[in-house]
Amino acid sequence: MSDSASASPTPSSGPFGGFASAAEMCSTISQQATGASLLPMSAAQGKTAELEQYKAELAATAQRVPDALKADFTNLKDIAIAGLKDQTVYSSGKFEKAMAPVTTWLGANCK
Image 1 (cartoon, rainbow, N blue to C red):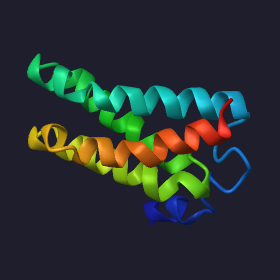
Image 2: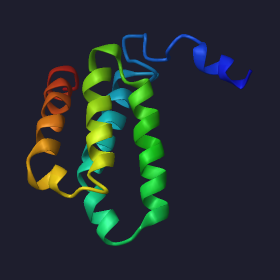
Image 3: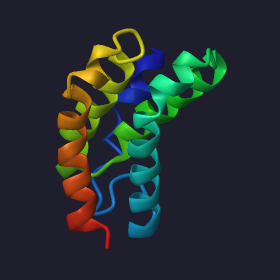
Image 4: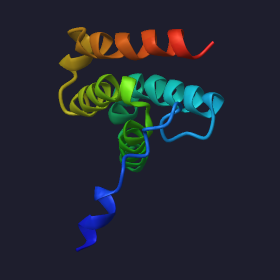
């Protein structure tokens, strides 16, 4: 029953989600969101190991963000990862739409 660990309470329930402080939360979420916009460049350059590491970091961050941001950040993560196989995600504006609520949240909560 190795699944029992994942049934524990989500680490995102505190005021800073799964982060120790507002500064750590803001810095990590900002870095991950910015990095998501660079995924197509890494994909185009064939940086497979970097992409896999980045996808893992993005997924881990999505688990740690505060509940108020969880749905929007998870959507951003899913769209960014989909964009690795379908570049139209970026050219059609889907990525920008997914990024907008994350950027708004950062602006409101991270000064």
